Length: 74
Image (tube, rainbow, N blue to C red):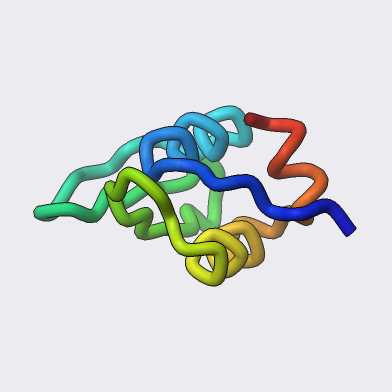
């Protein structure tokens, strides 16, 4: 199993953009991403300098990726 890297919220947004997520809006310190294809899934990414590993793992799981696939997108 690949160890999760320490990434910022913006780095995570760029990685998710590569698989079809686009920035829908930003509310305070959270960026809401929306997938372009149906069913238009949403991800809420905290805009922090460093995302907690549990938060990042949860976002990866919600996007339907594995840790290895996410690391390849970075």
